Amino acid sequence: MMMRLLKILSLLTVVAALSSVVIAQERLAREVVIPRGEHELKGHFFVAKVGPAPAPAVVLLQGIPGAPGDVLDLGKRLSEAGIHVLTFNYSGTHGSGGEWTLANDQDDVRAAYDYI
Image (cartoon, rainbow, N blue to C red; front, top):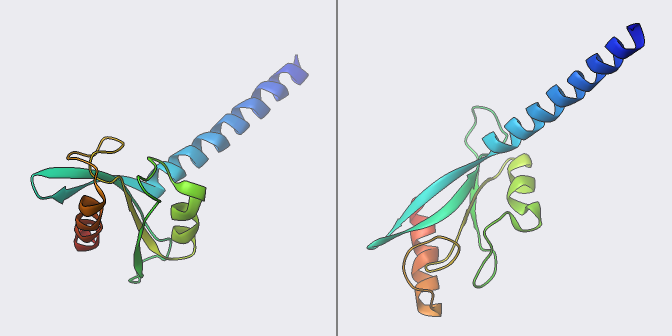
């Protein structure tokens, strides 16, 4: 009976630890909506782990036509290194409004830059 109780407590400890990791990752990246003319771009903002001090920020371009997730975990890695990171989905891709074209990509990058 005691062994079974210890196994259950061990399992609960693992579940609690995994839950806190998932919660920390969710807090790390915030979903954002970037205004872009008459439509919006979907994106994520990874908050730098620096405490109360100001931190540099980058707009991370994830290729053309992009990807909905954190490519190569770069957003996460840079935020852990103390840099705010904004990723976004180009117009007409992965849930962002508008139409995807190379010309629109340039305006999308400008909108993301203006956002931060």
